[in-house]
Length: 65
Image 1 (cartoon, rainbow, N blue to C red):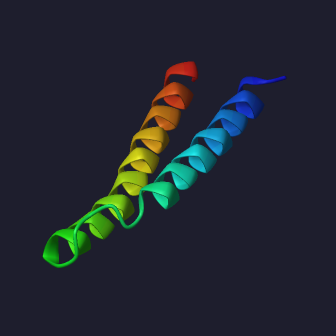
Image 2: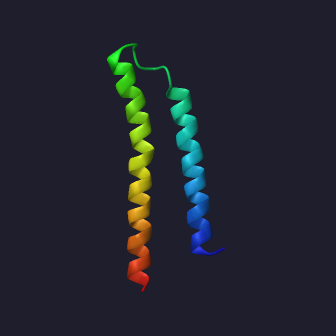
């Protein structure tokens, strides 16, 4: 199994786990503005993680060349 396949498999497992955790956690915040910020946080966290993973992947690719 190549590193690319391992990376893809780990990313898929991490994403699935993150989605399940987020789904289970939904509704935990009290109603009102805090609840809306809670939704925004759950949208921003996967985007931030994706940005870090893309940066890490590009750094590794650049270091190999």
